Structure formats: C-alpha cells, structure tokens
Image 1 (cartoon, rainbow, N blue to C red):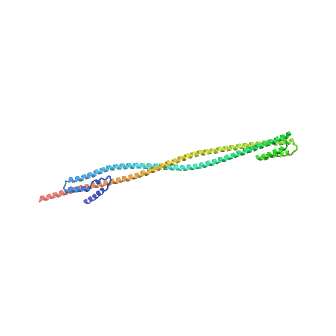
Image 2: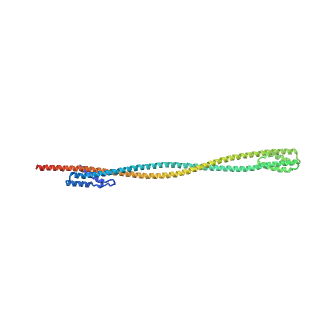
Image 3: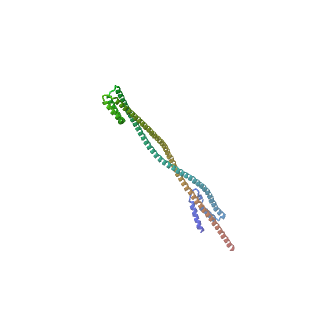
Length: 363
C-alpha cells in the first residue's frame, strides 16, 4: 500500500515539475535523482544519517524555495491589491464623470431645444410687431395727408364765405356786381361738397341765388344774407376746429400706439439678445460636456480593460502559487515517506543481521 502511494506521489511531483512558471523552482531539483542517490547509498551500505541527510537537504531545499515563493507571492498580492484599488478608483471616477457630464449634456441639449423654440416665437412676435408698426405708420401718414387736404378744403370754404361777404359789402356800397355772386356761389358749392357740409351751405346758397336774380338790391335782403354768411362762417370755423381737435386726438392715439409698439419691440430685442447669449452658452455647454463624456468614456473603457487584465493576471499568479505550493507539499510528504521507508529498511537489516549473528553463535 505504501509503495502504491509512493508511486502516486512521484507522479504528482513529476507532473508539478513539468509546470514551468517564474515562481516554480521545482525544475531546479530532481526527485528522481535524489531517490537514485538514496538507493545508491543504501546499496553501498552507507550510514543511515548519510542517507537521511540527502533527504533532509532535499527537504531544506523545498522549504527554502517555498519561503522565497511566499515572499514573492506576498509582493504580488500587495501589487495586485494596489492595482485593484487604483483601477477601482479610476473606473469609479470615470463612471461618476461620465454620469455627471452625460446628465449635464442632456440638460443643455433640452435647454437648447427650449431656447430655440423661444427664439422662433420671439422672431415671429418681432415680425408681427414690426408689421403692425408699419401699418400704423402708413395709416398715420395717410391720415396726415388727408388732414392736410381737408384743412385746405376748410380754408377754401372759409375763404369763399369771406369773399361772398366782401361782394355783398361792395354791392351794398354800390361798387359791387350781382354777377360776382353767381361765381362765388359756385365756389362755395364746390367747397361744401369737399368738406361734406352741403346741408349747412344750402340755405345761404339758396339766398344767394335769390339775391342774384334780383335787378335791384334790397338792403334788408342784403343784411339777412350777410347774417347768414356770418353764421355759416362761425359754423364752418367751429367744424374746422372740431376736425383739427379730432385729428390732434388721432395723432396722440397714434403716438401712444407707436410708443407701445416701440416698447414691445425693445422688449423683444432685449429678449432676443438674451436668448442668443443663452444659446451660445448652451452650444458651448454641449461641446464641453460632449468632450468630457467622450474622454470619461475612453478612460472608463481603458481602465476597465486594464483592471480585467490585472484581475486575470493576479488570478494566474494565485493559481500558480497554489499549484506550486501543493507540489512542494507533495514533495515534502514523499520525502517524509522515503525517510520512514529508509528507517524501516535499516531496522529490518539490523534485525536480520542480529538474527544471523544469533544463528551463527548457536552453531
């Protein structure tokens, strides 16, 4: 049974000796050579201590090698732990940066979309306000032109009334002509249409037509017509003043509307400037965080790969250490068994020699 176990251990040690790596020194020893040396010493009947010293030297060599291997293993363990800690921090830092930069990038992109939409609304509102202002300016210009023309019409009407009064005064003094009344009546009729006051002009025009048809003038008739002209002049002058006041109110309303539209345009312009500044900032934010996220992603990928490689390498170191340590344990177990076998052999030889001596002494 011990012989079978010895063969198994020999095969295990031989298999371990063929596994070459930088921490396995078993290839420097030859257990087969040691066993051959032990066998040779046994054959030459060397002392037991000499044979055991060979095995002890082998054991010391294995133990010395294990001590060296343990020291190197501890160094590698510290290096692996240091590398694991370093790569873990690098990976976590890259993840944090990637997470934060991606979140900020999403915020900037969303804000840019919102600001772009606001800018489009601002542009549309500005276009509408400018269009409204142009319409108001055009209407005001047309209104001013109309007032100017209408003012001249009122002035022409007043001038025609004054001319008619002068003609009546001339007729009354004997220097005037009734033919002039027909002429000025036509002018007054035209101006009444221009200022849309035909109703007020109708009585005086009728009175003038009656007066023009007379061959001799009646002072009473002249005075009555003159009174009608004076009343008409007051009414037309009052209407002219009302029209001028109404136009002044229109101008004030126009100026107020123009000012309010101008304030709206100023507000929209300031808003457009703020939106453009915001968009410029957001574009820069997107570019910066995109670069940060890309760099962090590369750092994460690179350190994760190095971490995986280091983990695999450290696992290989661990496996090599375990395998070599187990091989040395097998060697030490085999050496112990060889020592027991050698001692048993020597005890057996001594017993046989003792029995032989006893037989010889009896003979």
